[in-house]
Length: 174
Length: 174
Image (cartoon, rainbow over all chains, first blue to last red; front, top):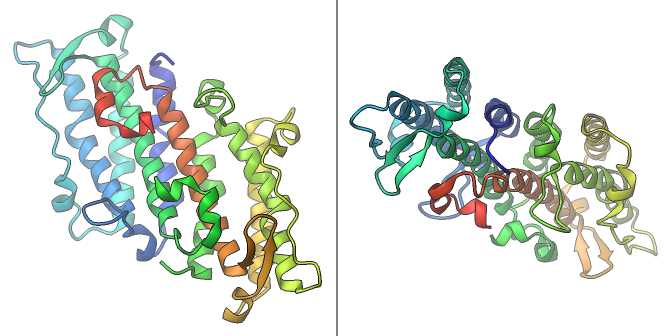
């Protein structure tokens, strides 16, 4: 499937509500569950998505659209949420993610991007040249990947509890 | 994590809203997307969950709780939704799933299950003896697995569109 701006936005605008519907009001047994040491809980995932709203997607798109002399992105800190979420409840994080995402989508829509804009390039610190189209497609796939991860992390908590049904639930061993 | 009835229900009651938040109002490019031939789209997944509400979880729990002479479950038809969803919109399926799930959770809560009930057994056509506790844990893990699958199926549609970021998105090749 080719990236389509409108279809991409239709997913991006749903993610805060999807994670809110899955997680809001759940107890710590679910929201702090992980897949083992150094893996992320639903709580950590929401913090990571917030950090992306602040420092990744829109700031990188701005670097590309400016087409200045320096088009190299700042490397993304995949662990910033471990500091930045400190002391916040999941409800606060969900509210913050919802607010930041809505503001970022307002910015994105306000740019009225054309196909020419989508073909503009920036420089990824590792990959080299990348297009705005690829960046925006990655924003969408990244959201969906973390929604899937949230379901998987939670499902795995019942890996033993399901008994023999484990054989029918490949998600538990993925 | 041990199965806990209240914690399990807290997930089961969220699933219709989670899938609704992810999918309601999306176009066919997303809701009919699959991972390849003979794999399921988000639309097919919702139909499958409906069939489970009608024929799997509560009917099997009833067989266990009755402790009659015949405790063998009817095999579950994993493809029934391909017939039963015909002609229905995704909005209709989501509404049907929401309604059936709410009624089934009313039934479940109304049973006021004790630890002794949860240890009662039925006979799975393939696995043999299984407990009510395992059946209910499987209901929860099965929900979460299909939420994760929905995110994964959608994410994979941008496998090519993300360009070099594919290396950072393991979900796209899972």
